[in-house]
Length: 105
Image (tube, rainbow, N blue to C red):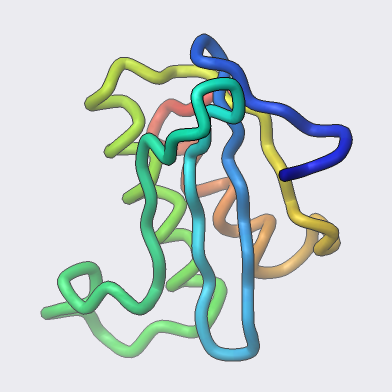
C-alpha cells in the first residue's frame, strides 16, 4: 500500500505502473481494499483493428479505457498515483486520456 497517497470510496486512487513494454492502470479503494476498475496494454481487445501505435498512443488508450470503466461505476474523481514515475511521456499520456473521457484529478 502507498505510504502517502490513499484512495477512499468517494475518491479512489488511480494507480499507474509501467514496464519497458506495457503500461497498467487500476482504480483502487484503499479503505475497502478493493480494485474497482483496471486496464492494461496487455489486453488484446483494446488494440484490435487499430493502426500501429507508439507507446504514448497505447498509454492514452489505456487511460481512456480505465476512465470509461470508472465512469460506468459512477466514479468521477480520483487521486492520481504516478507510482514514483515522472509525470512525463507515457504516464502523462495516460493521464490526458483519462481526463479526455471525463475523469477528474
